[in-house]
Length: 107
Image (cartoon, rainbow, N blue to C red; front, side, top):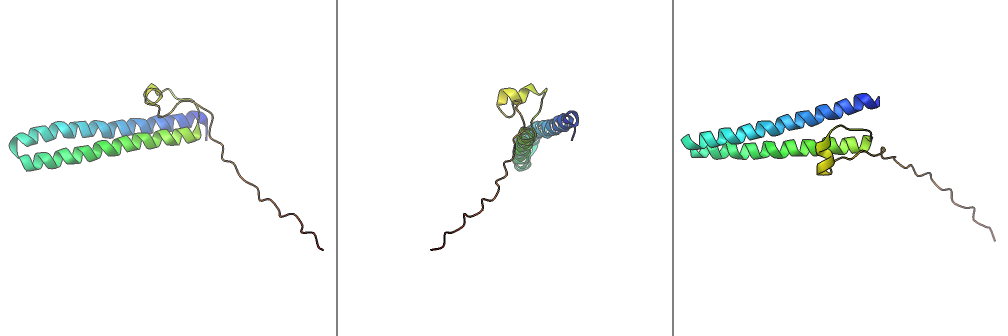
């Protein structure tokens, strides 16, 4: 994959996770409005907003780990300050070669 295209995919992933987090904040505001009318529905909406916030945070963290595995440049300064991703070379997977058994001496 081209490194330029890879960084675009990471940025799209970050933006989508921030959209999910933003929707959860809208859910919090809606939960406060519903809470004035019906407490039970307001609490349900509040719990659903918390779940959505946690899923958005997990999604953001997962995209950061995927970018850390791929390596390369990033224009996202939020990750730098949150210690989610800082530019570094890609992690190389080490492959261990099987070691043959030494021949047994016959006595």
